[in-house]
Amino acid sequence: MSKKDLLLCRVIVEYLQHKEPIGSESLKTLMNTKISSATIRNYFKALSDEGLLFQPHISGGRIPTLSALKAYWYRHIDARSTIEADSMECIQKACLACDIFCVLSIEQSNKLVSVSHIDNKLLLDFEHIGITLPFSSALERFLGELKGLDVIDMRKIAYQVRATALLDALQCVQSRNLQFFGVGALAEACKDDDGRFHHIISGDMFDTLENGMYCEEVLPSGYLAIMQEIRLKSHLDKKGMDKKARMLCIGALDRDFTQFYSCIQS
Image 1 (cartoon, rainbow, N blue to C red):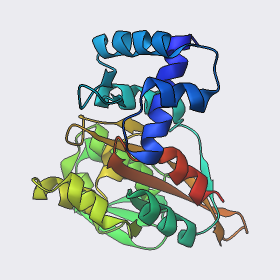
Image 2 (cartoon, helix red, strand yellow):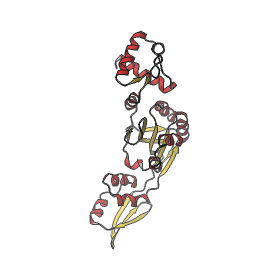
Image 3 (cartoon, rainbow, N blue to C red):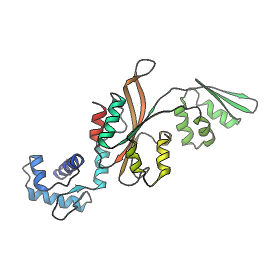
Image 4 (tube, rainbow, N blue to C red):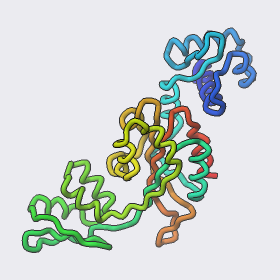
């Protein structure tokens, strides 16, 4: 990492923790570096010209721009990994401390066991419930390939292929266990968009989003959404293993997601 990138990274870390501009002298002291304050100011100017730092006041220090924060989180968060959380209480405390919204979708197994053609209906027999659909030979073949899959995975596939009738039918099969934390942070992110708020609260994003990081694709500018797998040590499945779930976190780009992850795993 270049000196300029190191300086930018430290500015971002300090800003996330204190939400205040930082000047060249303060940064030099914090980093305990031999780089002169004048050189740091030159780096500040270069980073400002690149759209990564912003100076709120002419005589004041710098703060990172939304572009810099977005790039920082994309480098430092691995949304493809599985997070291990000690308890729901840890998640709740982390959301309150960091002003971040979080919703967990805890897996409840309900696999498709069989597909039968009876009269003009297709009977879909799941582990815990059965439903019927109007008969279609194409749909029967399609569902036959899905036998053994959990309803959660079936809903993802139905969404991907735009099988809206099947998606609606599976809505009554899937009994999602949703746990919400820090809803105030979500309300702030969706304050001008009630439709977006209800789309997230309903849990529909667990069908539409793959694990990963999202910004303007699903949220207003200045916000970050993270979808990933999580294991809950305080919740065990039938085999005595940590319960698996998916977690959706939403917060402003200037929220300290590093602290958030540290809190839920401590």
